[in-house]
Length: 406
Image (cartoon, rainbow, N blue to C red; front, side, top):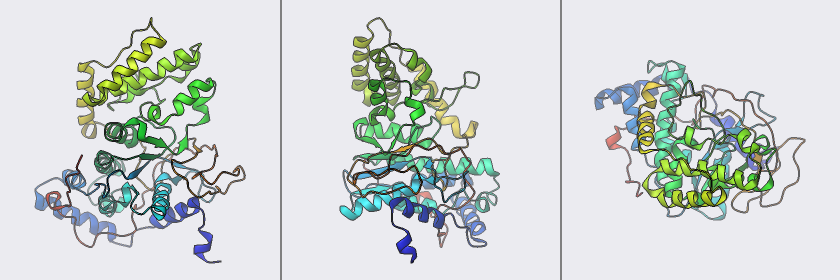
């Protein structure tokens, strides 16, 4: 049986891509890439870090067509052909989905790593220890640099999204690039109503809630605002949206009626929308008015101007004051979360996850309804892209820059 015959379903195709791209770099390639970065940074009169961030800022992630669907991703799903501490990264599911969309309608969809800028940044292999060690960084510092570079590129990618955003993620975590960087831009550029999630929320999030609250929390526009991880009061987070978007599930379940639960969820959305800025003022007003109807005796508390300024300052200082948690939203392997596959936003071919629990699904499903738990893991130090640059990356002012048009 040929390799082409074996790779049949989207999941199998995604797994094959992940395995191919996680292969070790050829001997000496990582060192060569790092020395070229060092040389280019010196010529630009910048530190290695500043050079890489500026380089990422100038890369081309503009949408070639207006209204394109843009895939976003975070974390991954378990797969029986991978070790228990590894997951199938949603990056590769997003890439397969993009190919499938474009097979039916050429030029209709894209994903970050497949853009010219994503390919260029991927060729630097910033997650690879062979690269960051030569740059004089340890694992934590190397991971932080890679995360910041990809976060920079992700933000511009989200800014350049004016069509539907298709999110390959289950529960968003507040320290991730997807929640902290991409969602704010998508809410502003594409609009919350155009943000769609491929995976259902984990059942342990929804358990104990009435159907009305389960439905509301499952709606894409709500999921683009909220999360369920409480901040540490003794160690306040620097991430801008963490406190604003937190929904306390235990407290939510304790509220006696669906109406009160809806008000609590909408209040978290209003807090986040308030932090988004002037472009969301109408949304904030609409949410507050509905909350007042649902809970006329309740005072809606939104972030003050001072709190908004403080969180903006904290966010600006984040990369220089604290290392990010060990969660990488742009790397070969991701920490896992409980996810259910669900119907995608467009008709797609059916597939079957190769697990005994998999049930038959309709032809409109991209992923079948499977609820499974993947253990959080650190991304292994392997490459994102199989090829290395043939020459040093250009100085940022020389790199492709289309103006983004946002």
